[in-house]
Amino acid sequence: MNTTPPGKRTEPALASRRVVIKVGSSVLTAPDEEGVNRRVLGRIASQVAALRRAGREVVLVSSGAIAAGSKRLGIQGAPKGMPQRQAAAAVGQPILMEAYGRAFRRLGLETAQLLLTHADLDARSRFLNACNTFEALLARGVLPIVNENDTVSVEEIRFGDNDTLSALVAQMMRAGLVVILSDVEGLYDADPRRDPSARLIRRVEGLPPEVAEKAGVSANPLAHGGMLTKVRAVKVLNRMGIATLIVRGRTPNILLRALERGEEGTLFVPNGAPLKARKGWIGTAVIPRGWIGLDAGAVKAIAEGGRSLLPKGIAGVGGDFRFGDVVELRDPKGRAVARGLSNYGAEEVARIAGRHTGEIAEILGGKHYDEVIHRNNLVLLD
View 1 (spheres, rainbow, N blue to C red):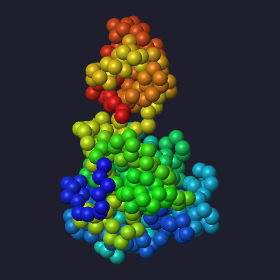
View 2: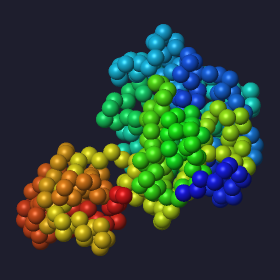
View 3: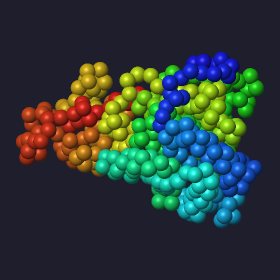
View 4: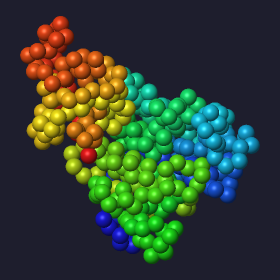
């Protein structure tokens, strides 16, 4: 990791043609402010317009709906409980989009709203439909603005934070870079709120384990997760071969300084071979519908030998998954080691668990596949 003082960097990722910019609640609404700060929003819009004029394709992933709705409803602080959050989001989302629409129209740009839940991405066909929507909007010069659909999301299907959502959007549009506008300058080697000698880490290759240990939480009650959720998003993006830049969102001209002059923030540069599109969807975009427990031999065959999962190596099963669903594969200690598309439903897997491939037809009354999960549909987890 590089903790050298700020200076110009030459990084190919910073010149990416397609960029996802995530605007956090902590940028649009400070703890001492009420609702969305339209002056800050306007400055971000001006910078995005400049990037567009320079030939970049941009997608915004923006928080702020709950903050805007809370102000309109007279809610003090962060809404308590899911129903209040959903109500605030329902009121605040049109307020947020009206603010963005007005700011960008002054700059000659048309905007489009996309509200997503995890359920929209779990089915491969719906995931691809969302990809096509992004492509159609970008081809027409429209700026997509994305947010989680908090009005209908529940704990089981919500992304939980827009850092994760921005990582999945970047995957859908095949972006080269995600810029996270935050309330901090980047990742430090210590908590700068407690340690005045903390130094900014300028560049991180991959995602070393010690990086996650430095992650903290935001001091803004209307923000979610802080640096911890950003590091989780970086983990997803690293697997997809997409770079991440974390910068302080309210710094004047931060986007232009960061992307054109390379002078700001912490840049996470991916390492290793990126997952291909289908495996990326399996490994990062889908919530598993269940789990399959493996014996030690199966774990070794999959993790070290690149093998498919056969019934003989299965020691247990859980959940209510069906053919074609993504499931989590767990080692004998219950740790998740992989994900994959199952060729059989949970009930069928339970019946053939521990048996030889040649017995499948007799047990189930027919056999379509030798493998419970084929290696081409299997992704190892870090």
